[in-house]
Length: 260
Image (cartoon, rainbow, N blue to C red; front, top):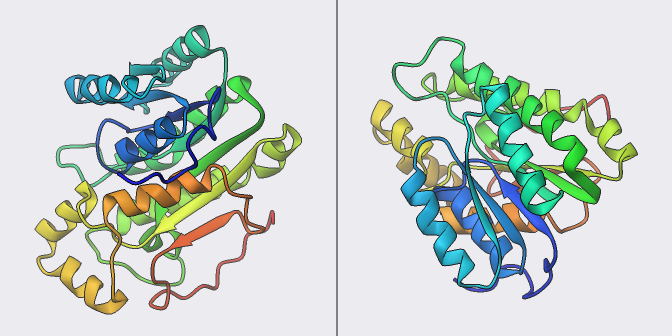
């Protein structure tokens, strides 16, 4: 993997990425470690994969803490941050990457619980640990970010609406974050090749990925999009707190955010 962030640029910093045992989260946490950050790898139920990643990152000379947590369970989230505080004393980067809602066998309100309520609770629980000049990044999709103005596939709509609700709830906290010197950026990407969501969408709606790729001209892969997420944690916070990745021509950008 090529160097995404300058070597040593995050030395002495600590970064936590939710849902980082695989996919976008794993690559994001790797980029932070390559830049010298100590990292916290969070997983829900894939401990061996998380431990394997941690072992690889420790070879870079950084500390890697592996913490399992169910983000929809406030006690589990509190226990995770208690462990982070014991190990590192605080946090400089928090990436809210974990999301879901297309899994089978979940309660009807699961998408909203995970993509809105849990995101807000993770941020609130992390607040006492966030150092001055810390950064928070929320990862979402164009299909969710623009859901109010551009319809998406019916199979994805409940997830898109819940992720947009999560984004709105987090944006409401921007003034309070800024008072503490904490920067907040939303990173929104088009469909990402190779993600679980893309796989589930393709299963529910065969041909969806190819159609979107043709429309957009290019879709980012996991590593490319993760690099944008990692950069969002160190680049200046955009005026609208939004970093759009990939084609947006198919989406109507008529959103207005009251608190900006």
